[in-house]
Image (cartoon, rainbow, N blue to C red):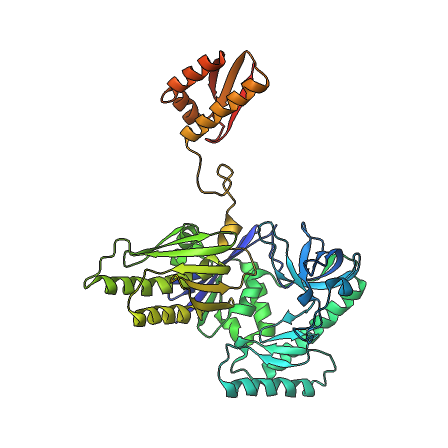
Length: 487
């Protein structure tokens, strides 16, 4: 599988597209005014301790107080069954150094931990740990042991007295001693600077800011199958190359400045694919389709055959649609960055082997996802459930906001419903105040219905209350909005 990374940079925002085999797989967007803060380290102040929730709110200088659970405050090697109250560990007003693990999403503040770590290309340094771990994605046991031994030898060679441990990242597979030594030296220098700021900085303040998105992309996403990184900003192309020369020498030749007149995101139809990723419906090549509905609690995905009728029998048609849907769903989760609980309603299959094959295809497709996910199997109702770690806002949350008319419901009250609400409200006002005349201000659709289909009901109401009811169209009113003026 071959891939490219496209980076579009403007003063307002940075956009990154990961393309595999000519198809957009992931999109990352970072606005200058609202940068992601996952990985940032803050010197904060405990704002409120909640013993009942075993949690606390920490003021780190953001718009909303951030949230930390007791498990993220306890020392790393504390036994899981040991019960410690949050009030024994934290007091209001206490300064606390924390790291962001989840961006603020919707109405929720950022999630924090005191178990700090800083990443480089091949390693993650954890000052509070005491072991060397290896990414689970490196499956070869011989390679895992080689890397673990190599890190220990490098630490001896550097005569490092710094406390802490390391996690060896997936990108380290197959690398040698020199690259690891460079990474270890970089991380120890970086941690010394963080340690100095930790002492000097006031609370609340940021003491470590992760790299900007376009450099993080190079550090975290470069794999052997990524053939090229194209960037459309000459100045930042030079910054990217300088970073590669210092920390990733073998990657510098893959970075390319894109000077074309055609916008870089028009390559591989990236703009069109991002637009499609904001819709509920995803069309499959066979004629079937997916319906994706994110909610506060979970995301539901429904699979339908649509216009696909197949060539053999119904079971074969359903099987082929579900196979195609499994691959498409894995791509949509990455592209839309959907997280949390995900429930998939595949079309019911009678054949047990077909069910197993669909689950295997879904599991295989999810392996390329950089976000941690867990497929937990099939429920009694035949629904497939999985979880995907959410660390930042979804594509829809970054690019969109709730509709001010329907308040995010996705539906509006009909003009008929609003008319009957107006009638009830007039009756309330009549009992409470008894004015001489009523003036109803409403949208065009509602006033039209009141004067047409509901005109007899209006006349009956006027006779019943003995008052005149007048109507006025307010063009800027939404369909659900109305006012009743007492005259």
